[in-house]
Length: 423
Image (cartoon, rainbow, N blue to C red; front, side, top):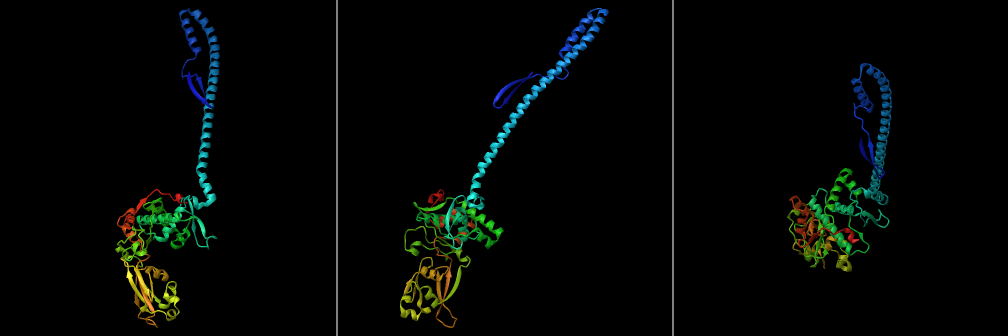
């Protein structure tokens, strides 16, 4: 006999099943062997007589034993089948429950994705930088009725990076730029009531138009990585977010905030030597303006604009004089006729790439002395980090932490400030 423990619908049963080994003699066969032994001790006549009886009786007994054995085997087979049918049914039930549980888990996992697609569209849930956190950003009125649209936080930062940093820049320089952008946004948000972001950024559609679809996707992923690898990282000065200006290239040295702005609030924005900037793209540019064009562009701060006689007389080259440079070679003060202004005022009015400039008189033209040639050096205001020099530092194997430490000495990197705390 073999015993089986069977679990059916949570209940355990002990089942016994008789085993019949191959070649084993049934009980009828044993009894027949005993009678055969008795026959041997008797007489031949008696043995013959009993043999006839035994033959008939043995046949009947074998027939009965065979029928009994068939009945037992049928019963055993029925019991065996019942046991394994119960086992199989129980196993099928368990498998069905497991399948149902697995389907339920799949639904739970996919539910956030489905909701995100329904609310924000497929791009929002594609894992492509859109992120699950959305912000409001200014866009041209031609794109949105109110000039504001919602965009994924990571995608927004990547779009600003694409606007400021060429796609062939190294990862460390790009990460340094991402930290400066994030810090500037955090700083702006602390003073913002509507929490609408205003930095210019490049959309994925604009990237595709500029670089083509295949290149644009690769560049976009690179910008996204720079943002994600510096997630929650900003520059702090004391308990406040640092002021983190940046520009394309300097005149060879970055400027001091105390000289350029007349404030001591940003001692970490200081003069830094950047000799590699001399090799930057469009480092030196030349522009020619007529004196009348300059007068019109600078009318908001020129004395001549308010003085009828001087305004009518106009200016000549002799009326333009640079009075002072700062320690980085940017114009601090210049004279236009009787008006004194800063180099930054003059740069902004004429749309010059830099306030590191010089004047020269043109030798050609129908009206000598009535035109001014302006030669500029550098691109941008010259404060904070030079993006060109950051690129060179990256190529030399420096990390983004080292790059930021060079340009903003005295600040501290914090890597655990989430953007959600600012909204």
